[in-house]
Length: 209
Image (cartoon, rainbow, N blue to C red):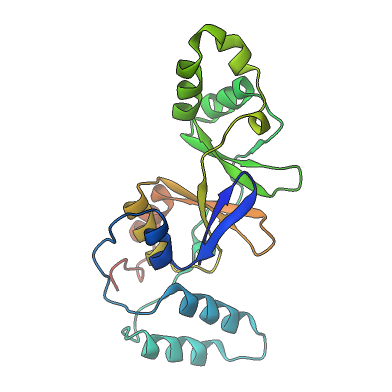
């Protein structure tokens, strides 16, 4: 399941298919498995019920999904970076720039004081703000993040299948997706690097299963 946040408010929450329609982009090539994100979400909830047999649940899911019984299912929560760097929405643009530079990251999530996701910011956004009003560069740099227009951000939930997230990253041309729970709290971030590491280090993981 995916969501789009606009300055802390949920604008959209649905499957990846509907996400593609929202962003008016072409779908990438269909993967071999057929189930949509609602099925993945229901499956995740099913596994969370303590009285259910996990092995039986997985076997039932693979049967419906037309997946080989030997295929191992991995959720985003298993590969995401849990201790991700964030910036508070009250921070200034110059403070945010220094955080990006010091931690050598391309982009970081913006969160409220309650850890609710607000958006994502990178050096390109900061540069565009300066170019739009170059004569007032110092004033721009001292603005707080909650005073500027932050682009919408696509998020995913912890039980999303990694294959679905990888497909959204490619189609929507994004390098990282914040992971948000049902309370809109940021619980991690998954990047292309995380997915590449999963492919490299998890012997049973296959993006095209």
